[in-house]
Length: 228
Image 1 (cartoon, rainbow, N blue to C red):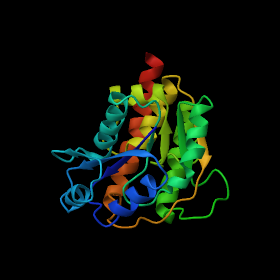
Image 2 (image 1 turned 90 degrees about the vertical axis):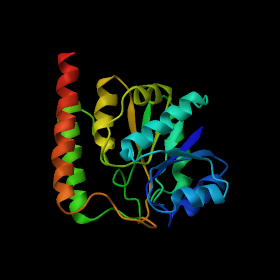
Image 3 (image 1 turned 60 degrees about the horizontal axis):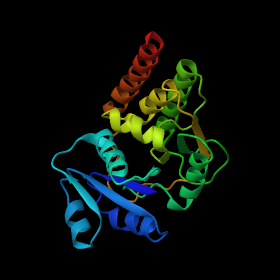
């Protein structure tokens, strides 16, 4: 079992994130996605297991690199924990339990039950509800937190995502792809924290682009799978 930690300009939080993961005894790899700050230097100075991408590939490219690392090194389950400190690694066993129980992809959801913790901003929640409804309409799967990057993958999902993974804003689109390839997807109630450093890539006009791009991507994946 491997924890994948994608990181782009996460110098403020990467040490605490890695500590939270490694202190629980998990193998991990940090994927430094061409950070322009001191993320890589901090990792190397502290003996952190890091793969350094020579340029910024975006979150999708970084996560796919992590899946390929997991497959190459013989891990049959991997778990994505973002480098900004939002994800609480103590919930990892609940995600893994769903994969061991037969699901291919387990998603940590802030909304599947009345979990305490950070729920995101109002406008982000509006977008989450919209994408959730799109996934339900186009895939038949009810996913309450489709933008969550806190997720565990079994062998089938790892193989699929090594083969193909969306480049930017990948979470909702990758769910659609998994469902249409016949993979089983489950949600697990988790609590999340506010990011411990850095800033989100989604804000202002980029949030409008995000919603349009992801909605169209889900539609394309869904229509393409029906034609196939």
